[in-house]
Length: 541
Image (cartoon, rainbow, N blue to C red; front, side, top):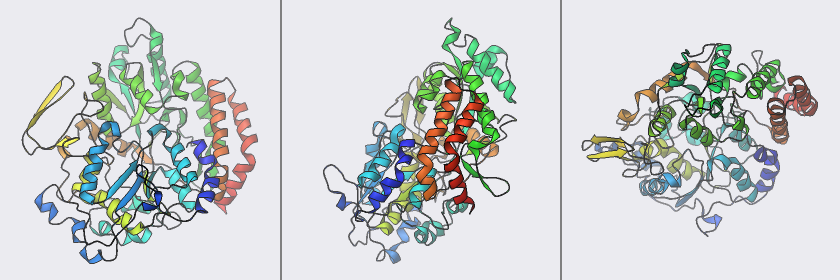
């Protein structure tokens, strides 16, 4: 997780929660007090379905009996990351159609994806809180524990969505409860990362896909020491790249699983039901040794410590790296499409977990939360959160984006890059990305392969899910397990920033600066002992 966000979180929330619980967020120069304002209304959420049959049975259109109890907001302020269509990728059209269907002014604040949690922290410190915020699992647990998020337990339990019979995995929502209380909602599963290997590079060297760590390391060595891109200089390529030697948020190890193997660098409950600090365990020493060996040999991209995910993708698309562990499902198609667009061999091997890894890790899903300063929690839940999975038009918006900008059913020939596809009238199809016209869009925020609820009359875009994306998603589901549960309490909040600063320092010093593994682990023990002892005592009491 971002250390700057976590280090000052407790202080930020203490200061922010001392303020009056007034609504927050603004559009232009409007005052924050107008956020999530509400007036009595008999209008529904206007969630028409893609077909006439769906519109007759859409759950949000049967809510007349509760209209007098839940007041519809006039405006809702929302902070979200880049997993929702960005401004460059047609967010304005998505926002316009969402507002038209909900009959609500939706004010989006979408910071840059890579610096999202720094802005989240600053926002809570400043006191100008949004009504709704999208949080990763670790931040969800922390902000909930500190009282910054509204309790939506009863709203979910009594919701039309839960009663609809379309929810495919209620256990996911149950897993979001903290001490029996629900503070957020996930419209889809968390997904996770799978290791992709360039088949052309394997073929060029006569290699088979590795099944053990020794074979994996040898593959990285071959990719690094041979002229894989045909430039005449073998130094132009390397084995693997990643966005950091350790992830910014749980499950932390998903971008370099072959090196971490059975190590988990945070607190988790072991097989005996006891909370332990995974960073202190012998398994972490093994992970540091493997990372150090591969980095010093040049098999790991030297810029890994500063890479963002976009940097990694660009290096993969530019034929500079042979192995990239990234998200399963839709991203499998995205990777191959971009390789095709660059004129490169796009066939990828989706690597089953090597023996020492055993299983990949599925992250806990990002969570949509209503902040505790929102003036109309019930209205925001009913008309914003619940409608994400209305089974009709609004779910289509969150899944595929806006009609005419992101998808269409018109009879037309769609051209992207050197490709063109002709569609008949009424045939649902995705359109080229406004940001990258050479590629077709795949989805908006909700991945249709991970959605928590079915469409009333079937997924309109089901035929647009590529065989590769579906195969990747199914493989990951078969090869993965859920990440350890995220927990938070006042003690963890107080020490988390300092503890993660120390963990990152140890990893950097050992892997990139020549410190021995033994000295690194001793550095961690010396610097963390009192913090770890107090945290474990609070968890195991």
